[in-house]
Every structure is written in C-alpha cells, then in structure tokens.
Length: 300
Image (cartoon, rainbow, N blue to C red; front, side, top):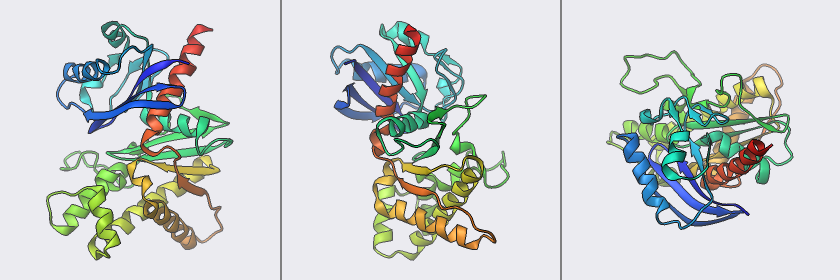
C-alpha cells in the first residue's frame, strides 16, 4: 500500500495525516497562513518533517484546479494560490504530488467508500468557511467544462454588490456557510463574533435569536437543494463539514426541505438528505483516493 502525506487545506486550518490504505495516523492541524505562499510552503515543510518517510503528497485544496496539469487556476480565499503550478512544489519537496478541489475530494471519498456508494447521481455539500460542492454523475465525480462544477460557494441567491462590506455579498456561502451562519447570529445578538459550538449551545438552550437565524439558514439551504434537484435530480445529498456532526443540523435541513416542498404548487420529489460518512476526514480520504487514481492514470 502507498504511504502518503495528506493535506486538507482550508481557509482557517490545514488538516493533515499520514495515510496507508484506510488507516489515518499522525493526524493534526496547523493554522493556514494568510500572508504569502512561502509561509504556506514552510508550514507544510514543518509538518512533513514530523511525518517520517512518505512516498508522495496528496492535497485537498480550495479553488479551480486542473488535476491533469497540476495547476491552480484559483485558490479560493487563499489569494497566494492563484495561477500556481504545483509542479514547482514537487521540485521543492522532492515528492510526487496530486491535487484536487476540496469538495470533489469529499465527493470522491463518499462515492468510493462512503455514503454515496452505489449512487449513479449524488451530491456532497460541505459547510465550513464556505460551501464546497461535489457532484456525482453516472457514477463518477463530475468536473464540468471549465472545472467549475460543484462550486457551491459561488451560487447566488440575490444580486451581488461589489461595494458591500461583505466578501461575495449575495452568495450562498456568505449567507449559509458555517462561517456565514455564525456571522449572522453574532450580528443578531449584537456581539462581535461566535463559533458553531456556541450557536448550537444557544439552540439547545432555546435561544430565540439564534433559532430565528438558524431557521433562516436552513431555509436558504433547502432552497438551493431544490435548485440542485432541478438540474441534477440526485438520488442522495450528503451534508459534510464539522457542522454535519451535529444531528440537529441534518434534521433541520431535512425539515426545511419538507417545508419548502409543501409550499410548492405542484408535486416535487423528495431527495434523501443525510450526513457524510467521514465528516471532517472526508477531504483527507478523498485526496488519498485521488492520488492513487491519478498515479495509475499517469502510468497508463
């Protein structure tokens, strides 16, 4: 079995592990540098130095990614990872590297060994700093003509405004990501900031302010699930990210989707909504699976 260093790069933290088969060891995380790519690469080197000997590096990364050319067209919120050839990273680390979009890694993990196994058509939606998306079509992870398939963060629910104080004002991620939910709850409660654990603690305690925002977030998710159904008609939608570990989130999205359907003036199919099998490990597992797939493909 191939022993790899695996990195899941997010907007706030880089999760990492050593993988060999389905065994994850040396798991941990470090803050994601927000300054320069050199700081980012040095952070990776610091982690690699602790891992011992590995045969390659698998990355789950935000952004629009050409996996065949190992090229980052965009890097999501990491502006230093725009227009980057990862072949330069290979020279620096002296190891083969394979890269894939974070949400597609999540979809690959769920399709290959998770809760989308056996689905011909399915979707993964991963909630965190943004909203990652991955689509399965005809039993394969679908990328689209411009590598934008699944860019759920860039779906919009209202017209964008460049002069807004909010980044990507009007986007689904700004309104309904975990980060967006926490921002909205903090604004409603008149505090500077809060995190997901605090929000769910307030919900469990019956906090009406937090509940109102949470219900609105779930309604926004339900509306976009409906829109996704209209285009893909998936058998199943798996919700991922740390927030999906809380049963209240998945149950509330299901309930919001039923409310949405009840308001329609025509019958509409229910889609199965469930949590991802691997939660926060999905991107790591998917990146490992992708590395094996790409290395086999390149050897042909």
